Image 1 (cartoon, rainbow over the protein chains, first blue to last red):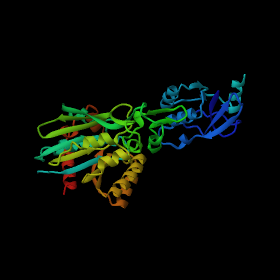
Image 2 (cartoon, chains in turn green, red):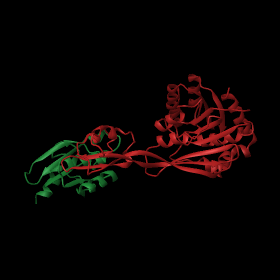
Image 3 (cartoon, rainbow over the protein chains, first blue to last red):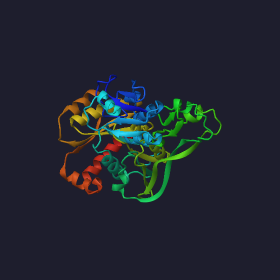
Length: 105
Length: 288
């Protein structure tokens, strides 16, 4: 299973980004291979449709669960249409690594 | 006086400076000296408020819509060309699933997706309602036309285009513009003969007026300024207007009595004869 975490940077020590649609990077973690890769989120510079485009991006990477702080209405509807589970980690100060570790157990 | 085919826009840059107040009271002040038809058009489609003052009876209402794509997933071959052509990211496309969907509210109705699609019957077009255009009769020669966008719709320009289409060649037309300097304002003022800029002598008023003056200059329109709430703020506004050589058409004092009458939804020029005369003088200045 693949999990996406919205991230403030492109390393696992960076903090989770509170924003889904306009986060800097997505960390895509594969629970089977234990590998983690980072993809830049083009939505950060978009005038509109950042949320739905980010949802499209994670869906294209075959992600089943997304961890972030805030999901906008367009992001939420699009993620729902893909059947992707949203996990709300609002106000967490945790790093991407710490969030990923919670899925290892 | 008979005036035909003359268009005035009341604009501001900053919001809340008194655009609607000037538009409505200008119309009421000059109605008795104009023999032909007057149309007062509310282009502030995000919050139209002219008819709160004019209290006209609804004559007709029609829907404003654009054409948006309707994707037939049985015929779609999931090539993704439509999503690639879409400048507004309104088509959600994931090849690996495969999944395709249109985000109705993001679509600007440009038709690029229909052009891009090479699969017969995969994309057809359907109407997507954006708002309404309503006509109100005030008297046999005065008409108020109001554009109003649907809650949740972000596309003001097509609704402004639709409301402006109702303006008549043989009439004196007054457009009440939205605030700001963006697309809805450009759409409102792009075909007018004169732009009245309403501002106030505060730092925000000056800052936003400057942006608006630059915009009107680019469009090559004649303009003049109405200063509202005179007595507030500083001289910066007057200094700027002097340097730019822009005419002050009228000054409206910062006065509790004016605010009181206006807040009750009454027509200022009906209550204050001196103000009526000033609006008539203003009109004579701009209509040469």
